[in-house]
Image 1 (tube, rainbow, N blue to C red):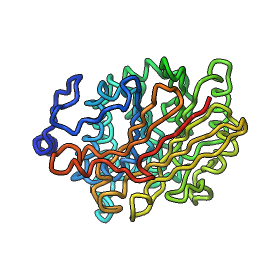
Image 2 (image 1 turned 90 degrees about the vertical axis):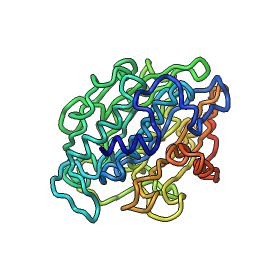
Image 3 (image 1 turned 90 degrees about the horizontal axis):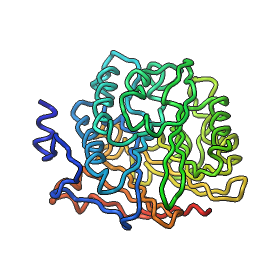
Amino acid sequence: MKRFLFLALLGLSVGLGGHAQDRADQQHLTDPHSFSMIVLGDPQGYTKYDINQPLYELTTVWCADNIENLNIKAVLVTGDLVEQNENIVRNRRMLNQTSRQMWEWASHCMARLDNKVPYIISTGNHEYGYVRGDEGFTHFPEYFPIERNSKWLECCVAAFPNREGKVSLENSAYEFEDEHWGKLLVITSEWAPRDEMLEWVKGLADSEQYKDHTVIFMTHSFLRHRTAERTANEGYKIQPRNYGQEIWEKLVYPCKNIRLVVCGHTGVPGDFEDSVAYRNDKNSAGKSVHQMMFNVQILGGGWEGNGGDGWLRILEFLPDGQTIKVKTYSPLFGISPTTKHLAHRTGACDQFDMVIEK
């Protein structure tokens, strides 16, 4: 019934075809020769309340519906698919779903993209342990085995064992190629990655096979909201661990071809600026490293709000081979002519260019 009402109210088609819906606020690339990647910020605010869950599905349905129109090569998810990894007690002050119900809904929503486009998830603290990521076990591999999405099988080129010794997509790498950008490698990491995991990433990026690739690194905790200071000493019990500043010093700064870091995790209720961050620093080779945090979970009413108002980011990779145009958009507002004027954020923190010089 919940799914039926969602589809009826928002007018979404269950049987998605290859073309975006004419009646939606259709988004377009600024250059027809560009390609895009879509960033979905921490979805846990959607999954933890059943009334919010359809908004999560709206974002993935929108991605599937725009694969051709926006030439989407990948969907990047900043982590925290669920509020709690292993919990059967519903605390109605903060959630009304058990962990299994949240995992099942997250899996259902991401299934909208299976066999259509690779989605790359940087697992967050809420995917681990019992409540908030103090322990190292997770149900992630059970719900997201590589075999479920044929598009992963086409582009996943490497993986590294998780904290339980299982080879999982928690630590994995994906190769893409474009006639203008050449070869790209997207590498994603576990929550608070261990030293050996960072060493694996560096070895992979520095290897003869990938040393000339442009590397995008995804990790959950890296930048603080608004100030863009790197995270450190967050107080979680998980060991061993590295947070943002250590990840920068051990991996990103010395690695010459990591040129973009995408993360989520931090934020407080307030202005939109309290859910995002951006900075640009030089690495050891003197090249710019763009670092972007996007976490929408407290937009749409705070911690107990609707989970994020459907906000996502469109990263358009222009055919000049070095410029990424960032746009912030909400299909929740864009789906209706009445609200589509609210669907585009155009402030300095919402719409900007990142130039990756060669």
